[in-house]
Image 1: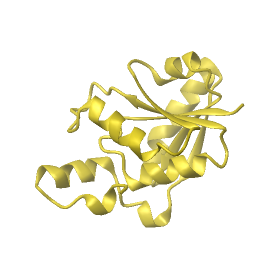
Image 2: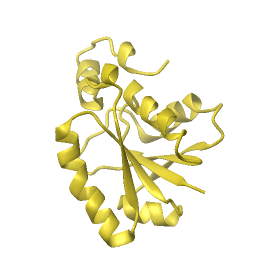
Image 3: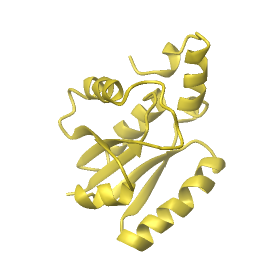
Image 4: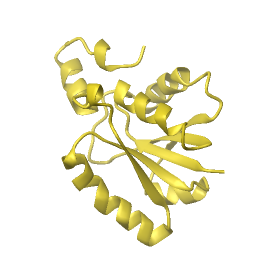
Length: 146
């Protein structure tokens, strides 16, 4: 069984994230969307609220679960017996950030990271931009799943 962890803060979970998970289901038997706590980020939406929203989004997908975790992603992967980490890439900047993390995870735990290039129509969407729009009362609906 191929089990992937899709880790992130998902503050908020965007159409880009949704696309990566749905495409990941074509490769993996199970995907665990793992909402992590990043001590360098101050979340806009509460952890429980993010979890509830994502669970509702995938209520018709029994092979997708949503969980929360603290600590290193690779430790969480080992605890959940994940075979892979799933990550989305919007640009070469994302790759430059993600590559050394993936290599470190592989060296320390043997867990491989699979990268999916984002859908070109969704490349401009980032949680950071969506949060900034929300803080300034902008309309964020076009960036979020229904």
